[in-house]
Length: 109
Image (cartoon, rainbow, N blue to C red):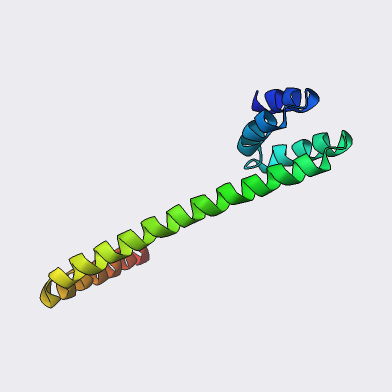
């Protein structure tokens, strides 16, 4: 549905609206080639480049957000980890190791 709306916008030279639709299309590899061909076949090379640049900006923004969230989780783990006693960490590691050994021994029988 978004593809048809985008193409209708391109046909009517409503490139701002076409770009808004196109940003939802470029994330789908199977539809991206069709989108590129549609713009190229009609000679809208500058508009296609503008759409792809806008999409790249969106992808970078999402990557930055994901990176920030990962850093927040890492810092939280470090803070919580610092609050946990060394003995508790050792106990957890032992339990994990024993659990893995137990699963391996069950697989051998």
